[in-house]
Image 1 (tube, rainbow, N blue to C red):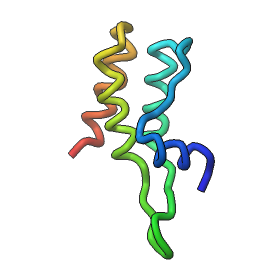
Image 2: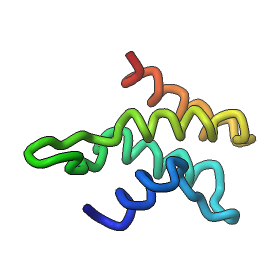
Image 3: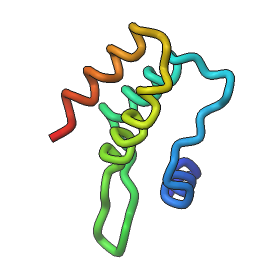
Image 4: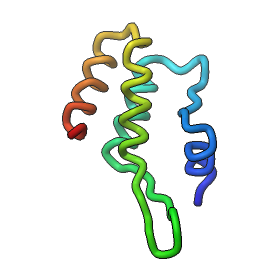
Length: 82
């Protein structure tokens, strides 16, 4: 399991740098929603983290002020959220 997977599973929130722009956050989350990491949860079983990234995107969305970044992220959530 990679360092990011360890952070995600232990912190249950995605740490973003304070200096990250809305567009950088949107790009990061969209990339990981499209291509989520997988973690081994027990012997022979893996899970991808798409639901985690979607949850984090929903958490960041209300704090964003860049309309283009918000739209990009909202559209990505709509694409994958059941």
